Image (cartoon, rainbow, N blue to C red):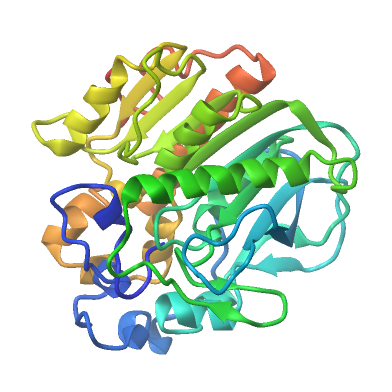
Length: 385
């Protein structure tokens, strides 16, 4: 989810102004210099909001991990001698009666939304529940630029409910990030984003480090290091493909509506990639960006488009704006490319189904025809390639 002062779209779709505030996504009444506190007014809060329930049978646990990569200095903060990350991990658990984890803290909600409203949202996962002791495929995910790791919660919980271990990375200084000691680091590069390719490469290195940590013997999770996937939304999608290109441990990648910013090697990328986007099959830069890369994808590949969707179809924003009743407050010209005409529940269902089908096929070797041909269950999805 983007924060005040920058839109993830600015780093993803050329031609879209960079300075699109988060509150432009949520409310037409807040300007680019105003506080976004009015975006989700208290009087409009529903009595109970939860992350959409996943469809798998496994109970889900979650924990937050602080990771410090002392082999790298931080590219965005000269005063930091090491790259410090926060990671949320979702995983199958045997089940427990403990309380479900909050979506985010009041402090982080305030930094991202200008209001503590999302602190009242509950996930479907049990906080710090013991992991199931059965080796599981690992999937690492990267959010959109300016977006908290919480913005991929619905997809992470879906995969975990089917037996995956899923880790979503907060890329420090590319979004507001809260650390266990209460320190809240701001987005240092959200205004005047540096070279996009450098951001993608930094994120790919972050993903590789998280894989190092979670596959280590002392990680405390049952991870099968021979089955690793990556996915991401927007800039995170570009980073997922870059991680696939640069790290041979990664077996498959999903790019959710993210433009490419780095060039693959002359031989191309020979491992499985799913491109899942919205409104990209038309004349214009988004279409051209993916078409320019398509022939460089030499392994198993699939390009799917959701013409009635929008850029934010593939993260948590659609169900959030629906639950809080603010979709109609988004200016029509913004709403068309942000959300399209899909409702939040449908956007979540489509994203979950195709991401899971892709990893089931390429990490677990499971059959299924969802990726082979159009489906009556998901008529909104168009097969492009």
